[in-house]
Length: 300
Image 1: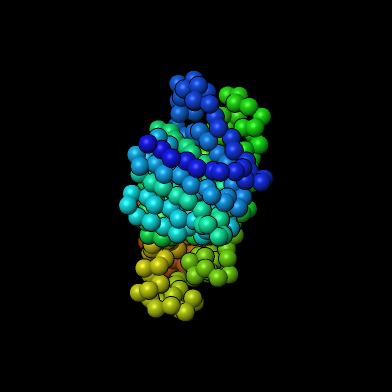
Image 2 (image 1 turned 90 degrees about the vertical axis):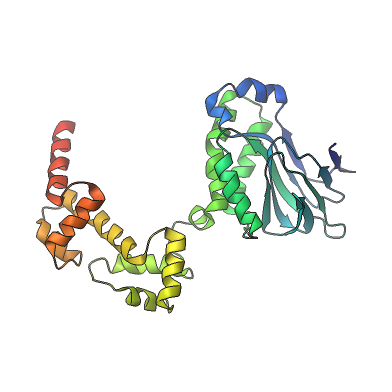
């Protein structure tokens, strides 16, 4: 039995519910059914906000606190949710939540579901369980959220519903990859960003692992683990990826010989460069350049 209590309206609140009939009619559309909203809202200083769902909710729930605090219980574990923290409650999971009695939270929230939500939900929920759930609700995140509210307040046209369905995965990518979502430019404080910039600046040099680690004042072992956890590759593998990326550019947009390109990218052995290029691109540098010329002829 679900218990929801909100003794008074919250001044400035926003709440939009998509009628079940609309949901039912549109879930026949594969595009809509992959990822869709059912409810969305904003509760400022939500005094007496309380909800208890012993059997869970049919939809996944996102709560993002921007001020004050509250308590959330999910599957027999309690979390204190404070400003700049979020929590995700998977569908059909027993839970409760309530605002702090003296400093009630201000939250943005949404209920959502869809056939393609499982993987994203699982990854975000892992972050919550590990308490890696600190994130400022600003910039593009809040802009997208507010856009959804404004659009739904205009009605439930297929155009609006499909737009939201197609853009929801992008919204949630902000929770999985906040550094990339907020700003793709290199930051001057993140050691991995600094290291990638260092690799780009030294793409024509032969760099050793120690030299790369020394640039950010970390030990080789700690730096290597940190870099691979973030990128999925070792620093040297990542450097080689950048070199191949640059080689593709030079093969297409310059007339330089393969031997010159190899030398400019820091490879003393042209044959090693060619083998590495073929591993990445499936063809030799010469064949890659020839294929581009053939494709350009077809275009013209």
